[in-house]
Length: 290
Image (cartoon, rainbow, N blue to C red; front, top):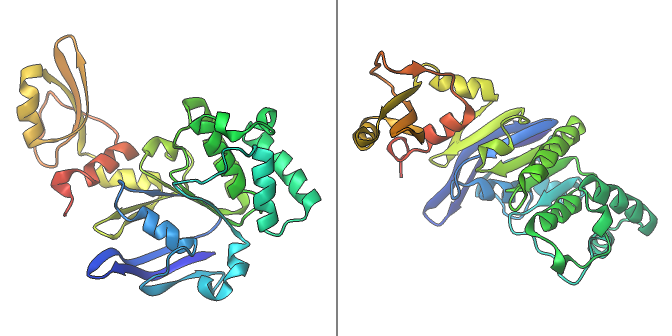
């Protein structure tokens, strides 16, 4: 179990995160918030790249600072900015990283072959990465995060550069991996995690807003989400009085999905909220402080 115990992080007078309380067991956890909300700060503390100003992070009851290398040996991490050597092949690059981790050569070669198959790069295992697309590089990054078969896998914006097919493969991979490890995915893209996350963590105003199942989080705006059709000319005024979630023009009219907290109209159809609705509502300018 990984426990974030009353953790705060400050930079001078600026409070990046305040009194964060979280618990993780095996499963997929989505850290969902807009860019700049503090996701990466939390990720860096969980991966020991930053240390809390106050509070502690525990793995199986022991502070990860005390565990030091013992904890890092259990950790797999894909940072948002993934560095690599362009003139190396995936094979050569992963062998290099395996050596840094202290893996034996035979063990490393077997593991790398397995991982490159897992991320569908086995056919280009010996090609220089300077020829690769952004999505292929990201898959190498996912493979390096799995090199040591980590018990805590942390991925910061992992689907950057992946095409739709790669995203589906990635989601399936995470679902499989989470059976026997903690998987924490930091993202601002709802579709990356809405079908696989056991729990979603949302941060707002530097604090944890939600840590719950997707169903329970969606229930927080149950009865407030509607769809209707309006004249195109009415759209601007409509947006002043309601939180627009999505809009589509069709036959000169506007199909609009929105939130209304008080008034209702017989021309509106109440619909079931989804995680995207909650995300857009909670981080809407009119509902967000500062």
